[in-house]
Amino acid sequence: MVEPMDTEEDVETSSQGNQNQQDGTRLPKAAPDFTFDALQQEHASLPREERMKIERERFGVEQEIIETPALISDSLAQLDEAIDEIPNKEAYDTAMFINAEHVQSEEFRIAFLRADHFDVEAAAERMVAYWERKVELFGVQKAFNPYVSFLDLKEEDYPALARGGVRLLPSRDDFGRALLFRHMGNFGSNVDAMLRLAWYNFHLAIFHPEAGEVTQKRGMINLAGGRPQRQLNPFSSIAELKRYVYAINSDCTSVLPVRPVALHFFPNNRAAVILMEHTLRYFSSPLRVRINIYDATRTDLNLVELGVYGIRHGAIPKELGGGLDFNYHDDMYGRILKDL
Image (cartoon, rainbow, N blue to C red; front, side):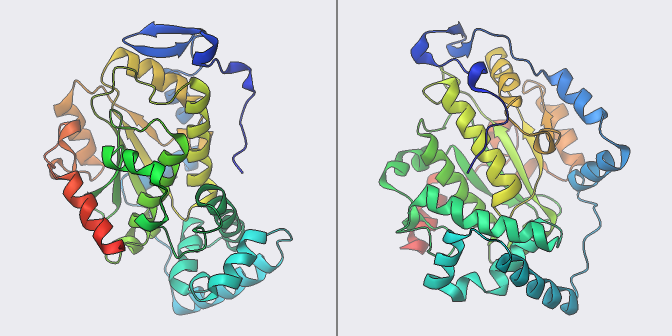
């Protein structure tokens, strides 16, 4: 499902012993071929209209599609036709057989249309890919349940859930968009568990009863930082890190009904910077150019810049220098109880 974007030759795993040690972090011998300067150059090289579109979305001032009843009705009908024309869609067909009421509901289908700006063919491809990928991650016994809840997670996911490496924040930005926080120090070591937790949190945001519609229409904001573990790469090897980034990239751009409009990263030591620069090469360009990199030691300046993007001090976790201090475990247990 997740296709690699370059060869396996650039991967050196810990089992091969080909790592440098810096600040307790396992890194490949070869210097990363993508730096923060290269990221800025890539963004600057985009066509002007594309750069302006990205900036408008970051600032929350993009022009929304006016969803008239006619547009919604016509698009849903065209979506059905576009899906019917896709030849190989076994997982989708199974979902229709098991839970057609959910799959055909307007609430579910319109999320895919919004993710692709009502491009019907793209939304059809995304929905078919969604069910195929969901089967891969959750297995046939749980993949066809509506949405993703705590009950769909596997027992091996529970330690990572308790650590809180991926957290949907209770706060929103000024435009009502969901904020997803990836705590670099609390990632679990199981790649598939972290991917399932990402899906769990994405679904909490996308289909939130009060704020889900805004997030579908205006996109999601990602924040990443926090005090890292001694070994910065939480996974067993660079190859596993690469697999995780490829999967997240694919899921966010062409599988889940979500639009990540901005990714704000706060590496807070030199090792984190090096690992982040290495990781950048594994993102596809459409997602990579939405990344902002901050100096985590310049908290006041970071808060000012985030405020310009509509992310206020009170919405930012304390781990990133903000004023949001919420009890993650109480929040987690509350959500679990709702699912039981």
